[in-house]
Length: 306
Ligand SMILES: Nc1ncnc2c1ncn2[C@@H]1O[C@H](COP(=O)(O)OP(=O)(O)O)[C@@H](O)[C@H]1O
Ligand SMILES: [Mg+2]
Image (cartoon, rainbow, N blue to C red; front, side, top):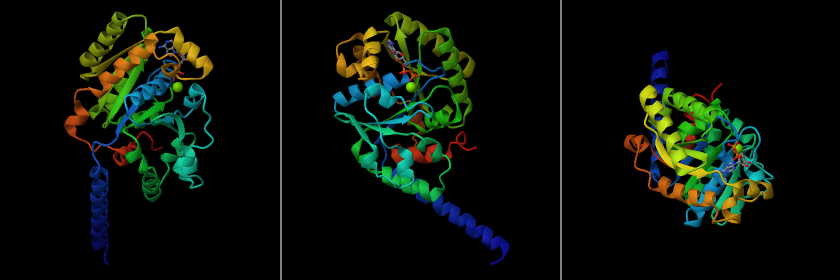
């Protein structure tokens, strides 16, 4: 085979691979929705919201996998009082299977601890990634929603998760520094090729009232529209509530401990808003949904590559 025939054959191979990938990613569409929870600043309530949102979604019959993708402190398990023995890294190295890694938090809610496996995702070659996705494939039948709790800040891993998901859900508090950092995240999302095309929504946590939530929302929405030409959906607010802090101390989700507390009521409203979310850009561009599509996008995310 001369050089140009070899190059053509490589191209054909590549094309076949892309077609195969497309077939795989588009076979199951609309089954599993992926939502990444992120923020600019730490300590704004991402992990709390992830856990309690999961509980509330489960209450209405949705099956949830909560991926703890915090690269620093894996705090989801700290919040709900369950300790995870194994994580994604064990699935990747083949020493454990999915059922040994998943931790049941409540009826219809399972935690998938990311641990050091999150970093390893970036280094997987194609074959190992496909194998991993195959082993995660059963989640597709088991869950309706994959919620991803990320660490603080806008480092590349977090952005990759945000841009690979169907919805990026940004959390801010009314604090000026938190709003400024949330705006910073929007700016970076806008400038990343994939991020500009995704549904971006946000929640105001620790609001003192509905009107404060709205006020913050208007500021963020206006700045995003005016300076970034970006439309972001305001999904609602969560009240600052001492029951949340109390539950954190007991290491149980406030939604389970105090189902009637103000924050729990707000979470229920958030669930309604999220499930009734109008089709945004992601729906218009119609990217394949589901777990495989998510992980392929994750892999393609150039932020994660060194
Ligand atoms: N709605 C709320 N009301 C009162 N306190 C809250 C609320 N949400 C979060 N907190 C407090 O903020 C702390 C940090 O929350 P956490 O979910 O760990 O933040 P993140 O994951 O963004 O770093 C919690 O320990 C809790 O005490
Ligand atoms: Mg956290």
